[in-house]
Amino acid sequence: MRIAAPAARVPPWPHSALPVELVPATARLRAHVLGLVRPDGTLHSPCRSRVLESALLLALLDRTGLEPAARSRVAAYLSLHCDSPEPLDRLLARAALRHEPAPDGLLDVERFLARAPDFTGPRKRALLHAVLTLLGAVPAGEISVPEAFHLHGLHTWARVQVTAVKTILAHAHGHRAVDEGDLELLRSTQRPGTVWEANLLIHLSVLHALVPVAGQYPLVVEGVRTALRHQRPDGGLPFIYDEDTWSTATAGVALHAAGAGAQAVDRLARRLAAIQHPAGGWSFTESVQLPDVDCTSVAVEVLHLAGPAVYRVPLRRALGALHALRGKDGGFPTYLADAPSEACMTAAAANALSTQGPTHRHEVEAALVHLASQQRPDGSFPPDWSSSRLHTVFRAVLAASRHPGTSPDSPARRIITRGVALVADCQNADGGWGQQDGDASDALSTAYALAALSTQDTPGPAARGVAYLLSQQRLDGSISSVADSIGPRPFGFTVPALADVFTLLALGHLARRLGPPPCRTPPMDADPEGEPDTASSPAVAGLPIRP
Figure 1: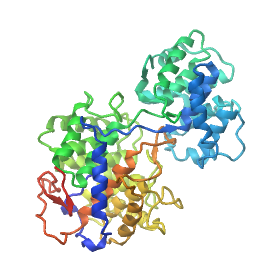
Figure 2: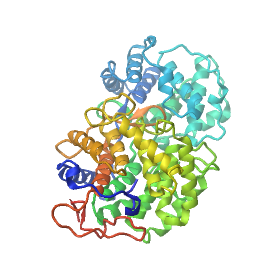
Figure 3: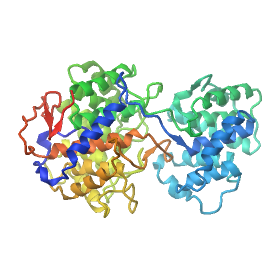
Figure 4: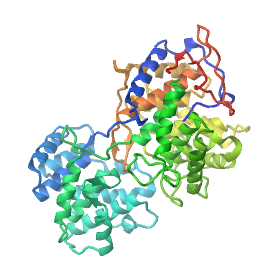
């Protein structure tokens, strides 16, 4: 996601091409993001409450009769979502509070599940059915697709979630016997005071599965107490505690792009190096054991930007971890080797591998071939970890822009041409972009679109997009946006700082496209790869560097 090398970029735009407010607005946002960084180098932004976990908590408290005061608080939170514009939230809140059957048409299940990758479909359908069954929103029907409960090839989170769902639905059909292996797996996630893998959805699912099992009530009581440690002031419960490692990594790239300077970027890089897993990867937050390609890839970019020589050892380990996950098709999965490759993860890995110059050129080119094969005729890609279709598009366009190839029909050129055409075609009248075709504009989708447009010749669409994006900036410099994070797919959740971070990234990309400002500033130096070096540059496209 970092700034492309000058050799891979088109000629600069004049400063008059973009709104004059770009520079001061970027400086305010940069200062805001820097203010979110703790002394240890972590960008901390807790995950907000979500209706899904809050509804499951209320149902659990009703089943057990525990913690009446906590029940009142979560009920008050859910009552605010009974008329939510989000159909799933509206359905879950009403069902949890009133135990009403779901009215026909309240949730288009097929459209909702289509937001998840096809290979996850049966599991996600079973999860949704189990949740609605627990809330009394649907009758307890049989799941007729056996692969919904297959554990082979699943990562640890999915194995536990599938086992909990299977147990919940078996209980709903009057099957009280629980396989000893399943019971042991569920019990292994329960430790007083600790939410396994920081995942409250799995934690609550396991507790619901254990409630009817003889002898497990003390474990359930302790599990409820543990969950309530994370009840938010608004009464709700989040999906996960936070995504601090992911937020820190993306902030490192964004701050570099926006000219925050070497000291700021290195502070985040040192934190990332300190929490790297022994096998070389990173997870979305420090307490989680399962690493993923996305966090690992962006952490690689941050360490590279902070100093390839300084972070040589952690970079070597991280690149080894990525290589171990590479699929035979040239693509990359999210978690496990031999799992299906995903377009967004492949774009992330290609960007990371490209930090090494020609060393991994073969792997990058193979990744781009896979990306091109996954791109749809309209320029979009299959669903990823964002509800905005432009998320994978911008990351793929940036990856392809580093290795565009010499042929007009090269995989990289096709990715760029189709991706940019999609962005150009779906710009709204207000200058912004929405998550899907016809959706209202939002800051995150607009930031993704602008990052893609920063690779192009014509600044006109970008200028209109910047004007919209800056209209979403608050007085403190932060950005107002609908959330787009998804987890588990296709359920959305909110980490507020990500709107700030991705907007800063986009504005940094755009600022780097501008030519010399009206006042003279020394030209930027370049690192050995030819990429801009903010560590030695006193200014970035007119943006003052913080010490």
